[in-house]
Image (tube, rainbow, N blue to C red; front, side, top):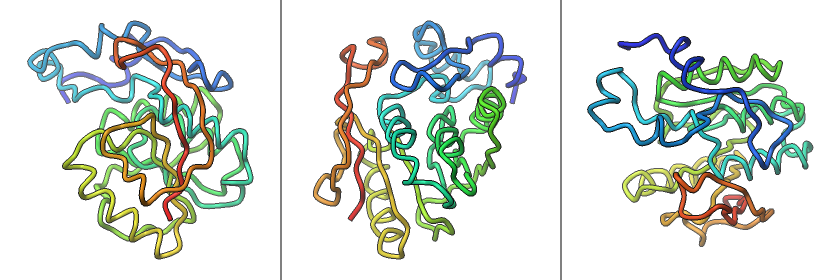
Length: 214
């Protein structure tokens, strides 16, 4: 890393609550365009991958809301939060009584963001930077918000999530209608209207569904 992640995150974010999950406080970009609309060259100059961790995406907010409203979903269970980003979903799982929570994200900046956000909410979360797609999961539950945004990624993600479901892992997805969501393999659990940042999305509110892989 060319830039110290702790210093950068603290300088370029503010501690605030996502609108659909006001119980939680996260280090988020207060003005989306300041971080998200930097050019690729500008991001490379500071050694920063696209800062997914700096925003509370609609799928994650919906899944986080569901977990807080239905704590029995995670209580006493081992939980993996896949593509964790800010750690919002992982934090909610910990607050809802999960026995253990591991946030997984291949972006090294997410490790720092999640550590800061976990401390802000007084929870303990483990972190893993490994690429776990295609591998067995040693957990009761896998949570994933906003992961079906890319066709190539969805093509490898869908069979993997189906496989771990067959092996006894419950898979919950939070999704605001991304193009590559495999709805034929899912059953809905809840629907929310989630406020979002228009700079990042195409509206001010996204209809977001929490799904279970079947």
